[in-house]
Length: 311
Image 1 (tube, rainbow, N blue to C red):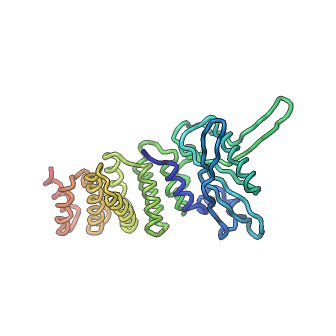
Image 2: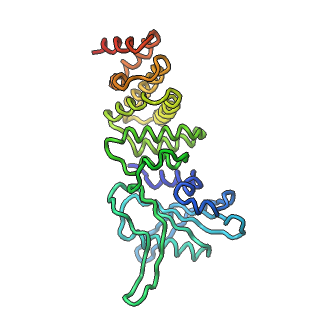
């Protein structure tokens, strides 16, 4: 099963500043970036219930141009929970008691349903007055439109578009756009793989969707296409090296497809969508044969003739 908490914690701890810049630009304006310290696991015990809870991410930072510090607490929630606002307050209270520092609380709702707006506060009130009104900031991914993040040069945008509101028919395109944006960022290999792995986890395409993805890929510029193929190939190779038995043959077919599409693009230019779709439907053996045959191709008609011979 997917360890959602681990994936989000790894993403947000690696790209903490980028996350703040993307969603909370005002905080980024007063946060001293060189002062950031990730605190050790914060465990809270509920003595009466006999349970232990762990805060997802707690960061200590200094106010810019000041010597005072504050905490940022980020909690990722993978399923709707009626008592979540109370849990956020409980974490706040215990962190505040322990560190006696201002705390900026953030909830990231990463579930796909329900689509209703989640609460942003915890209240204790009587008919005649309010005892407590605790507020926290919210990023609810299933209420965000991925199109609004296409032009954001931010690695967190590249990753989280995969978890935003996506129509089923748009899944192949969104995966391509995530990887296109990632390719423009020119991150180091480890960070690139972190994001591409995140995207692949949350946008795992069916065989039909893979063919549509390949057809979309064939319509973009050659340099962008090559960059995306390199990311896809690197991620698949990593998966193979980890020894995943289930899906090993499927991964080999996808890798072969990515390589052949890149070779065809270099030799013949941008492929028409119908050609890209036909190539995407070939078996691994046929793709390997095509990778050799295409060395003699001079035009799209040569590809058409070769594909006709496969019918």
